[in-house]
Length: 453
Image (cartoon, rainbow, N blue to C red; front, side):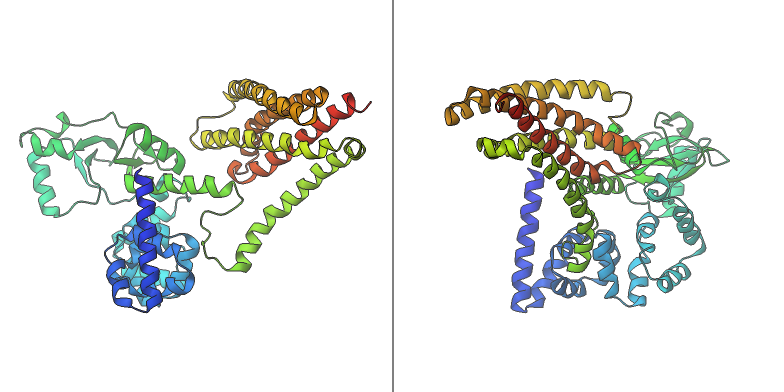
């Protein structure tokens, strides 16, 4: 329900924005844009064609530019940066958190990166370099080194005095982290405890040491899973020696989850989640042509199988009418299994330890559903063609192809993952080939054996 409301709001904003731009009235556009959050502005910019996008980008408050750049895809960001001069870029990114700046800095022109680094104080520059030293899509790249730490041998009164002197806390601070003299992570203290306990209470009496720290080399997907499992708002990040390096907050994890969902949805069609909705035609053509070419190659395999039964089709024209049903039903069933598998692999729920149990379960489901559908399809064929043999053949072919679809839906993404390929990106093409080939082969083969002797 909330997602539907958000989509309707975005569509309404986009409609109002487009109407105002078409009328040439930039005042209402500026007022509308600057009432939105940075994420909402980013979403609107991605929804606009390049010409209108350029106009709206020029109307965004300069102080919001950096946050908006963080909330758009790589391709859109590249275009927006091209509209800015180096001084504007430096001003836009200088107040970003270190983790957000780390996401952005590698997309900046080299000359601008140098200016950005020169504009930072030594501590922040070292923090940024530390974050950038870790691979992408790891906890080290996600973390913000700006953390508030305390020692266990102090009291609440001392900590509160320190916080007042500090003057501010990093965003999404729900806990302070307790560290040793060597800066090793020992636990955390909730801000609520600091505010509700007696000032003389020793910190070591309030330490919560049950939350495990996240290892700096952990993958982004695993970080998201741990946040989901434990309902964390923030989590500490440590190295192999348990030295506290920084923290990851829920806003970054939400971005990971959204990116994973977009990746699964778009990769299933052979697309890049960072592709601009209005990317240039030549670029979009190049990206899509590769997978469409692979799909064309696999289509020839299907065509070859059908060609082997050309004589059978000529003798019984009903085969040509009915054979797409078997292949199509198998493709749909396989896609359902494939969606579950890709999701399970992304969440770490499926692996070589449990795939046989999952395969057995999916085959049983395929057998039951195909028997029910085969009975319905066979009855319809009997009413249409008055041929019990043809009805039995198409029902049996449907069962065979549904079982093949279930098997392929489980094994293809698992095999691609084992070979180091992205299951979301390539599984669909191979699944379609399997269900088409098996659908045509089983139906036409059974018909040739039993109906055309």
